[in-house]
Image (cartoon, rainbow, N blue to C red; front, side, top):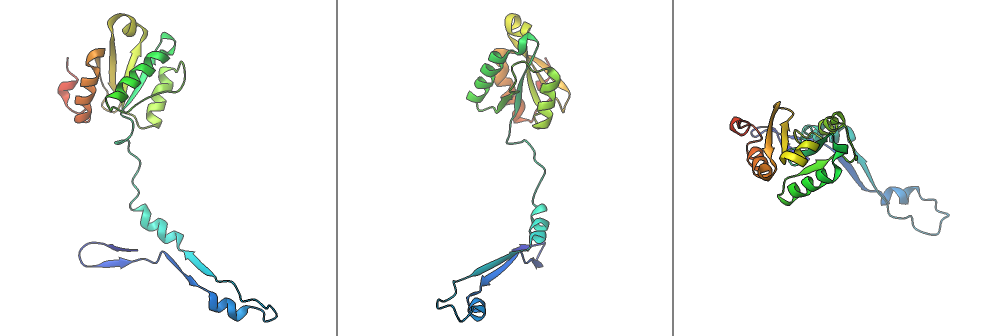
Length: 174
């Protein structure tokens, strides 16, 4: 492995070595055997060097390419069908979305799931919002912002919000 570390100075690291050992086997082969020794190759890996050189390139996992939204529910028996339908709608618009794979998760379980999977945006359905107002609550955990959004405007809102990584203050105002 060869890498440049600024300018013309280059640093080489030995990561592995190996070769053929046919001659050595031929020397050690007992002469009583009428057959020739088999061919042999060997390799030695410098794991410490490999780890040392690769750890500089390993960055902590961020969810930029992963899930953008967690579709949650509050009350209403988990609203599993509604959560799945909304997630499917988001997928159709190329918005990466997940649901907690439990029929009736508590809000705490859903927050923990979002935290464990590095999901910052929640779309929260409630029994009342589904049956009466046809709206959802969009909450960004990291920014501590939330907004009630009409269901038919949700896709547009999320696409605009994700374009600015939810940091445009005007998207959160009514």
